[in-house]
Image (tube, rainbow, N blue to C red; front, side, top):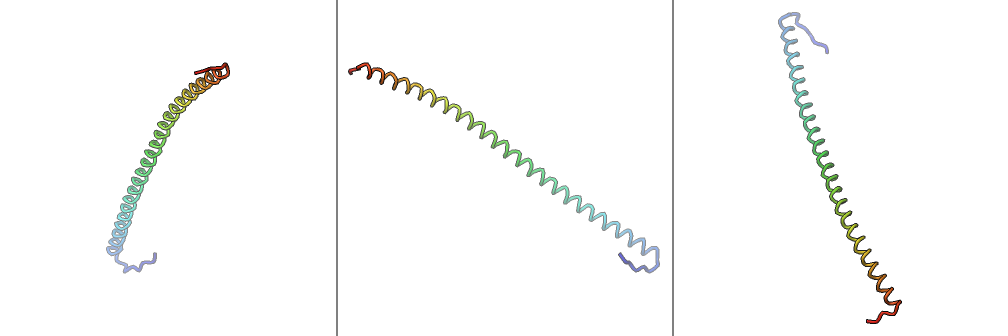
Length: 97
């Protein structure tokens, strides 16, 4: 940065002080932006984690439901198979209603 100086130390001192204040103001602005970005990132991360946990809970619930349905179907098919077996056995042995 090329700055022309009048040679007066008071003016140069004031210029340096103003420049320092501008730099500090810029630092504060950047710090606020960084804090806002960090807060936004944390909010998105917690939302993503919450969504993932919700999906896991839904899958666990679906797993229990599917296991119950599978158990019920196994029982029904076993009973149906036993009934069909007995009917065929009775039919082969000459069952007459």
